[in-house]
Every structure is written in structure tokens, then in C-alpha cells.
Amino acid sequence: MQNKPIVVMKQMPILVLNSGSSSIKFSLFQASGSERSKLFEGAVDGIGTDRGKFWIKDASGKKLRDETPALPTRNVAFKLVADALGQPPFPYPAAIGHRMVAGGPHLTRHQRITPEVLDEMELNVAFAPLHTPIAVYIMREAEILFPGVPNFVCFDTAFHTTIPEVAQRFAIPEQYWEKGVRRYGAHGISYESIVYQLGKDVPERLIVAHLGNGSSITAIKHGKSLDTSMGLTPTGGLISGTRTGDIDPGVLLYILRDITGGADELETIVAKKSGLLGTSQLSNDMRELRDAVAAGNQHAAMAVAQFAYSVKKFIGSYIGVLGGLDMLVFTGGIGENDIAARREICAGLEHLGIIIDAKRNDVRGEAVISSEASPVLVRVIPPAEDLLIANHAYKMMQEA
Image (cartoon, rainbow, N blue to C red; front, side, top):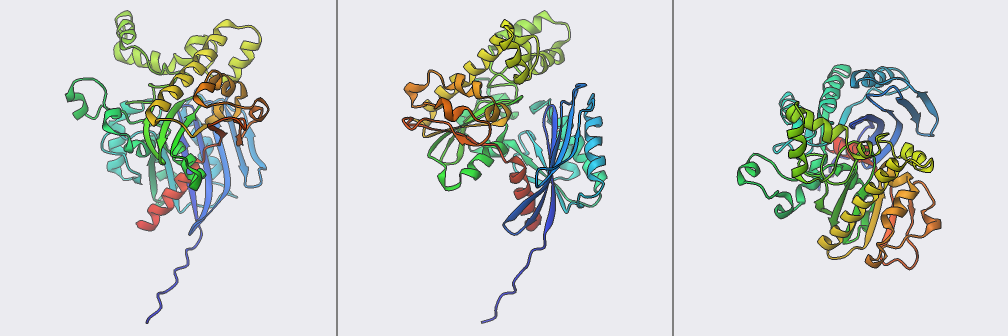
């Protein structure tokens, strides 16, 4: 019998670009077979403000860049990243993976980026208006900066394609379903990364709350998305930094009749001027709101209370959808670092089996924060979106 040749995979540098509504995160992985090692990571945060942050650190945690530049536009922000990555010690990538929130009804699987894919994403900006323009811009710029390097896109919506039709549909005329109006969800790569990290410990009934400037929550059964808070766009669901979350459609009609700028002005109000910022009249940053609450600011206190209340409501409803709960996971910037938010959200849920321990909860980063007496295991797990994107890009490179 003839032996099959042993294929030795050489190491492949993979650049991951993850653009959000106000940030660009990036990382460089060395990939080979089943091995993934992160070489560098960094971010520009605070896009659209004069209080930006730009940092890069190596695998040991050593800061290579640590700056506070003004970041008035996405162009300025990405130029900082591009200029840095074009110099040593950063290796030239063999592949680039991008995160995209939503690509519309016809783009829901991870795939290689082509001119046709880029055009299709630009046609569907309405599905993620705060994210798509900057993501597509970065994809086009990456092709210029790294000529000949294959680019791949990973969609948040891919994880949520398992949601049953009864949860996907809105109670509106059938013609809109046929036009692709349905629940797509977001933060799917974050949720997939939590399932990936849990591995064989993924419980049957899991709720993951991804809490940050953009916040959402997902009910996961047997490792698959069953329902998620964000809908057609990331504006729905939980209250976010600048987005309303779920809202009575009558409120939107009232505002629409009260303004002169039509749908565009309405979109600005519900997506950029509402949420924590709208209620607090101060900031969309939970850290600043906590300071304001401590100083006696009542508007900030109301914003924080609304946020916790909205998360609490979804947890209760998703326990009903799942038929019980085995594990609750907090992730995202607020989920990982805001001790008070986790306490406020879980307070009053003891009758549903969620009991956190005050000492265990007094932590930032990965931890088990439920008490020994809690029927539901409550954990804090940082997302690993960049690792998942690197995995998908590597796999698609091999398949190609």
C-alpha cells in the first residue's frame, strides 16, 4: 500500500481587522495547522472625537505604541493603523480577515472578498448603517495597502442563521419579508467565540450578554443561536451607547412628524443621539457615566438604570424561550469590566436561579461570579473575535 505524502503547512501570517461603529481593532496571528499564535494586537478607539486612543502591543504585552490622537474621521483612524502595519516588526500578511456586521439577505456566510461582494455590501448599508461604510472602506484600503493578498469577510449574521423563522419574522406585511426584512442579529462572531471557548462545556441552555458601546444578548441552545436582541439592524434590542434599543414604533412616527429632515434625521436620532447618550445628556461611555452618578448626576443615574433594566428584561424573556437556563455569560467591554453593571443586572433574578457572589463579582476579566448556591453558573468570558476570524480566514485559504 502506497503511503500518502505528509503535507507540512508552513506558517501563515494572518491580519485581522475588526471595525466597529467607533473603533478599529486589529491583530496579527501566525497560523499553521491547528496552531494559532497572536503576534501583535492593537486598536484605534474614539473615532469621531478629539479623545482618541491608539495602541499596539506585542505577544508579551509590551506596548509598542500608546498615543491619544484626535480621530475626527475613519480615514484618519485607519491611516494610523495602515502606516504602523507597513513598517517592521510587522510581517507581511498572507491573508486578511475582516469582520462585517451584516451583508444583507444574500451575504450571510463567511467568504472571500471580491468586487461583487464589496458592491453587494455597499448596496445593503441600511442593514448596519454605523458599521458598513467604515468596514467596506477598510476592505478597499486593505486591498491597496497589501496588493495581491486575499481578503476574507466574516459576517456577524452567519451565527444567527439558525434562528427559527418564527423569531426571524416581524409582524408586518409579507412583502417586506420577501425584500429581506427580518431579524439578522449582530455580534455573531463574539457569540461564536464564546461557544468556541467553552468547547465541551457548552451547556444546553446558554444566554450570552455582549455589553459595550453596542450591546446585545443572545439565547443559545445546544451551541446554536435561538434568538437574539438586535433585529434588522443593530439599533434594536438592548439600549446601547447611542442607540435606542427596542422602541414603540409610535414613538418613531411621533418623532418623524416632529422633524423636518425625514428618515435621515430620524436615523441620526435613533442611532447616534439616543441610548445612554440620549438619556444622560452627557456621554455614551459607561465609565464616564459611573463617575457622573457618583457625583450625583440624576440623568446619568437614569441612563445606567435603564441599561441594566433592559438587559434584565431580555434575560427573563430568554429563559422562557430556552425553557430554563444553565449558564449566563457576560462579555464585551461593559460585561467584562463593569462590576456594578453585572450586580445591577442580576439583582432580582435570584428566583430564576441567578445568584452572584459579591466577592467573586469584584473582578475584571475572566471569572466565575456566581455563588456556590446558584443553580445557574454565571461567568465572565472575554470574546475572542480576532481568533475566530483568523480561524475562518485560514480555513478558507486552505479550501481555496
